[in-house]
Image 1 (tube, each protein chain N blue to C red):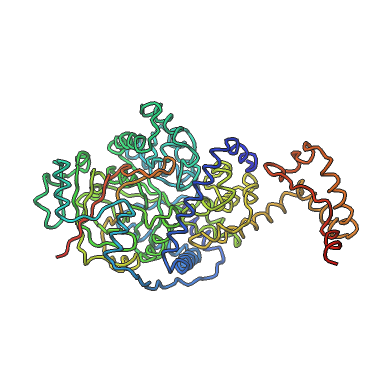
Image 2 (cartoon, rainbow over the protein chains, first blue to last red):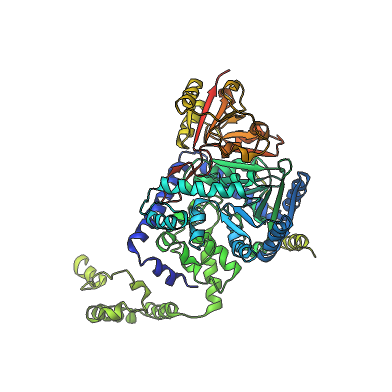
Amino acid sequence: MSHPSKASEFLQDAAKAKWHDETLWFVRDKRDNISKTIPEWEELRELASQIKDNVLANLETYLVEFEKNAKANNIHVHWAKDAEEHNQMVLSILNEHRCKAIVKSKSILTEECHLNPFLEENGVEVVDTDLGERIVQFLNQPPSHIVLPAIHLKKRDISELFHEKLQTEKGNEDPAYLTHAARLHLREKFLGAKVAITGVNFGVAETGEFVVCTNEGNADMGVHLADIHIACMGVEKIIPRRKDLGVFLRLLARSATGQPITNYNSHFRSPAPGKEIHIVLVDNGRTDQLAREKFKNSLKCIRCGACMNTCPIYRRSGGYSYGSVVPGPIGSILSPGLDVKKYSTLPFASTLCGSCTDVCPVKINIHEQLYEWRQEITKAQGTNTKSISMKIANGIFAVPFAYKISGAMMRGALKILPDSITYSGLNTWGKQRDLPETPKETFKDWYKKNRT
Amino acid sequence: MSSRENILTKIKAIPRENSLLPEIPSFEFPMDHKAAFILSIQANKGEVIAESELKDFIAINRFEKILNLAKGMESLSTQPLPSDAHELNELEVAIIQGQFGVAENGAIWLTDENLGLRALPFITEHLVIVLEEKSLVSNMHEAYQRIGAQHSGFGLFIAGPSKTADIEQSLVIGAHGAKSLKVVLTNL
């Protein structure tokens, strides 16, 4: 997995890449505008951060409290130490109820556990019901953004896809028309499903309830028509008190898409008469991350995606260039915790500008953690071309004479060297960048002439 | 060792500094609740209408499948609540009583006792929520104070109609759930 090579694939289609960049910046802009209408915005971020710090410091206590209260509300609570156990758990609930088809709403955790392919291998039909997720599922692709799963696609792509899969008119690219076709297709699936799977945005220890937020209403359409609701939840999604939801629901949608709240915010406390709710609490590397002092704060993430929308690298390289379930800045500090070798290029896919940290609603120091991962990875990896050139530069800057003549040499050399050498593969900074024209004299010479 | 024990033991073994759970202060809300609420609902692509406009909406569209659960709108109902939510698939209008609304974002709180069936506000083609004007609170902190220790199997904030922007970020109303949300503010 190499971010730079995947990113250059994305950049092949320059027009699409530009659209991607500008569209995500537009979402970032909406986030800015709405956050400025809340005078206490910064105080809310600080509160959210403190609540999450308290959660991480007392995680075991809150998990036990959550379990106790959820069980008292007739919710079945299961624990899974890793993705495999999580998937088996879900499958065994399905088998118990002889269920061969499910509907599923957005859940990054089930993507992380690769639940869909696992269930399909075991003969279960899985239908993702979020429109963006259904689109990428038709294409056998993962989501490219955690909030906007199909942001890498244009309406022309979707029109062609729906023509093939849902028999829509050829060439009709109207988003309203295409959405309506998906509505009819998914309505059938909702009405037929016995089991619905959802993710969880927040689990409340105090009450044992959990909250799921959507704009489409797809999680609720699935869950309330099915007999069984399985909710998959990472252990870090716990919050202590019901009133903490006030803080997080004010921050989540404003940070994600610049809207004041998602249109549906469902609080599940106990099953409706005759129905069942199951919660699967999943570790899958989270406790390992909690043990890493420098990186544990990444577990505060509420999956709003604001760091992706603002990131100059994400916007210009696309979600797939990260090769990890959670892309973008937050993904680049979470994924190396899961497999440092596989994701070794991700912490370098950043300018360290710190914009991600500035917009994060729970104040995760994302860019500092990216820097820390670089230290860990470089220590483990040894030298590369860039570090050799840095060593040479270090030698030149340390000796005044060497600095003086190397400047003159480079000014001369750059004029006569052919582009094939100046912009060779060794100089990655030469890709898509032109060197400025070489000045005739040094600044030192200019200063001597003009100022002394 | 079970996975439960495994996870809890692993967490316990990690040395962590304690960090205090903050108290959540109350924040001032400078706008008039009603004016702010109406703006919020509009921003969420819903609409605040008068009771007479609701009757017009039903008449003009010739809706025939209407289910009412709100106070004072009984005469509009054309069908009773079924026992199975699947039977609501053809429902054109659901009228529900909201408990209270939130001025800052237009969210309206509903629980099992308002919904009859949990699927109702999602599966209906059009959703109408009747809300007492004096029930409006300023922000989400006040909302959760108001909810307090209320115990319901299912609680829900609805802030607008079902919507999506998953195709090229173009906003489309009516993804899977209600294609419109109308709020009738009553002043009793």
